Length: 110
Image (tube, rainbow, N blue to C red; front, side, top):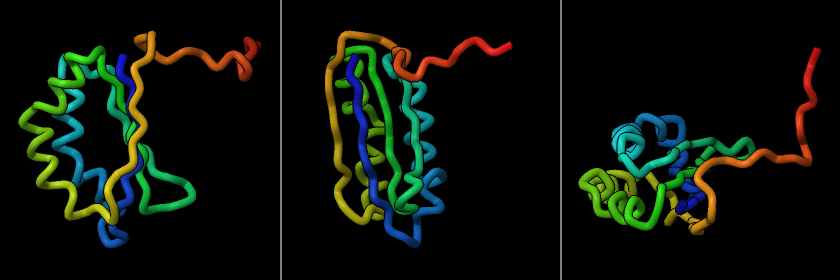
């Protein structure tokens, strides 16, 4: 799968509204057949920073995402709300879902 993490720094005046601003793009991406997940989180240290964790089934799914109409639309709609160019880590990894973090395994509760 293609695993991507991106950090988006939003202009302070729009930070609280980012989930709504990015909603159409988010919903359209989640509906893509090759999208495994597309999840936003907000930094607890910087309220203007959102972290996007996304994954696509394979290279073809990633290419379909970048070539989609909603991706092109987002390229025009989202940048005016950004304080800087988003930063990204993009890797192809040999799995198709989250693995358990064994070092923090939760013991069975009674």
